[in-house]
Amino acid sequence: MFLLQSPEVRTLEFFTSMPDAFRRHERSDWADANRGGTVTDSFLEGPVFDGAGNLYVTDIPWGRIFRIDPQGAWSLVAEYDGEPNGMKFMDAGTLLITDYKNGLMRLDVASGTVTPYLQRRNSERFKGVNDLIFDAEGNLYFTDQGQSGLHDPSGRLYRLRPNGQLDLLLANVPSPNGVALSPDGRVLYLAVTRGNCVWRVPLLPDGSVAKVGQFFTSYGPSGPDGLAVDASGRLLVANPGLGYVWVLNHRAEPVQVLRGPVGASTTNLAFGGAGRATVFVTDSTHGHILCAQLDVGGLPLTRAR
Image (cartoon, rainbow, N blue to C red; front, side, top):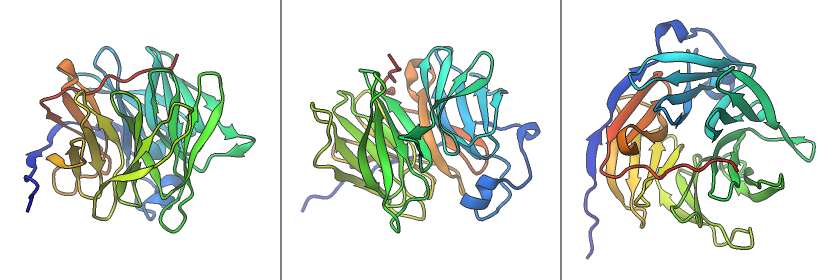
């Protein structure tokens, strides 16, 4: 009988924490809906690096975008009436944001100005967009999660083409969350949080998808969230309910488990540092950024065309 080799288990290290001056100890509409009314001073998500090595993160309940320099110092870039989640750079000075409250929003990093990018589809508001990624052709894939789950598997996966055409690829997902692409761009990995799994979505030459399957199955109170792919094609899966980051090979076998401290909520991740070989992880419920040095660097992210 073949037995899987036990994965290497490592501990995520502390990098930096949101300064007390930025923490808000008060109720928010987002926390009332998503955290049972618990006072939530911050909830970090959407990590992404710029070309100078600065890390940008969102703070969902308070509509804020922060910049963290390579030494771990924080500065406020923008604050607006929204609930920002995922982010990717469109160009060196512009971030595209999936905003649960407003749809797709655009941030000019230099001025801190946030403007609408795509707020509705056919005059209908989105359920609540969550995460996004560009492919090499400039197509934007993004998830529309809302409050979907096993009770209501109506979450969506969209593709926005460079010419403005918006394609609905999936409409039956129980809580679509993080997205990542294989190195050749032919497969999209989709975190399905309430299904506690990751789907494998083949992207066909005619623009459609078919034979979508379940690639990885997790466990625990809250399933996969943010995703990333390294240069060798391994998939990294942030799992907030466990406080883990799974590192999966091409057969979805865990080859490493990166563990956060007790009580950590590891929601999302991004590669940065020298050679992009360090993975940085948002510990959302504590306002911390954790990190781990890996043996393979992250797959370079593409931008809008």
